[in-house]
Image 1 (cartoon, helix red, strand yellow):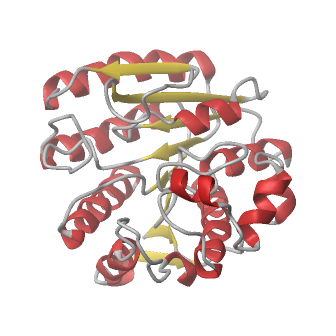
Image 2 (cartoon, one colour):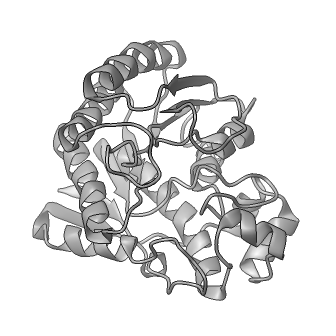
Length: 298
């Protein structure tokens, strides 16, 4: 069975004037429900405020939780923060933290949301409200669950918020492989950044991933990997600039799983990015990532 974390608040109603695909997480849930007993479901508690404030500015945390985010930050996020969106924003980091604990127990676990890697200390950005990867990572280390943790980000966009929020934090390192010319225009500095040229296909991508992630994991010896498994490197993704095939995405998951296992690190995955007009096709790509990772750790 594959340990999967889901919270009803992940499926929030779309705020007015939002271009984000709000039905994606519900479709991911439904497709995983079709897997029957293959999935072991878990429901997280919302992330306690004090852990959100360990990473984000307390004033910004209050703005989100009280659904009074000012217009400038609303524009950076890309949609209004309604009470339902606020509840979702607090639930998702709790889900990533729970997935990490389940991964430590079972080898692998998946959150059906998360990977909100653009959120910064005092504002959200790029469809990200709270940075669940950073919040979960800091909590896991500071509560003593692990001493060394790596965030591995394979979304097509650089994990700029994660890099900025976790820079210099003892025991936490960050890796991001992304399209060099894609959002954000101003990149942060991860522990290891791998910037890729537009249009890179399966073979070159997978070779570069293996040649850079292998020594990264060997050097830092994480006891846990938080994996941002965005599927937007797919060739037909609306916001991607790379050219991975569906087979290339599956091979990426198997490679990340193999390298994590070789390093002795359990892996907890988050959904990350995936964009386009066909929400069901995008959800299928996310579910394929979860199922492929689950099979690799079985």
